[in-house]
Length: 163
Length: 148
Image (cartoon, rainbow over all chains, first blue to last red; front, side):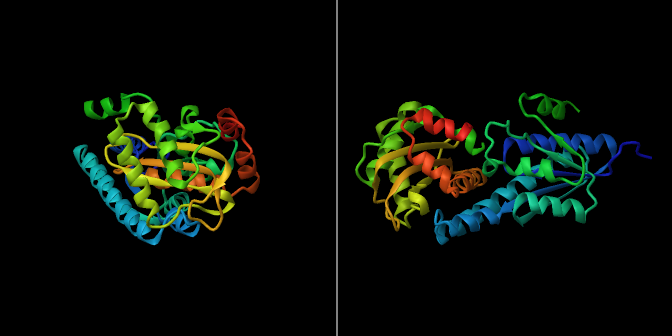
């Protein structure tokens, strides 16, 4: 019987090194607590659409970037699955399209997630709301507890290799 | 890498001295090249990539802003150069541009490229912010606007 206060962990993947560190941390957490693990990469089609609307992107570029993002999603999901397998952790990983923070909040609600794991959150360097990152938005609006994994040093990578 | 993390005083120029669109790109690429000690060949390669992208359609948007950008092979991290021109320059949009953000992003990180462009578009959707940016007299003024 698990005594930890969560059973379903979700790690958000965004293609950054920080989110891979978060994935490693989530795998270690799932392995040690026997919680189930989910990983989601959100292909940011909302931003792509907005960039076309504001004429920063042309349609051809949108198509190219969408393909690039899907490839990136596939690559990161496969890598996360391999990392999980290396620790004998079963993982449910998928790519979703939309607005990252909205899709993650929706996934949390639909799948009974009770712990969200995020890569690093930006230091507050500007009061401008427009510059708030997706991770910041998830941190602020998540309906469940959130763990923010700092990637300031390599300790999590070393820990992952040692366990 | 978030947009704010790319802002560097050495990569801001006020005022720009170029008189046309290609000149603006060359001037902004020069900031990046000088900062990173790039060869003439690499400078030309970056200018070519940006101009090639512009040939698909101008990145001049509303409010006198232009956001030229390109994916650059071999770039390790994204860079944003900001330039303000005293005289608006024809950059192929409906109206001339006086504020330029040149975004160079690693070819293998599309998510970061989109995130940076999206942040610039959002912050430039404020008419007041753009007015203040256009009125900046120095790179310190520009820098301060983002970190206020």
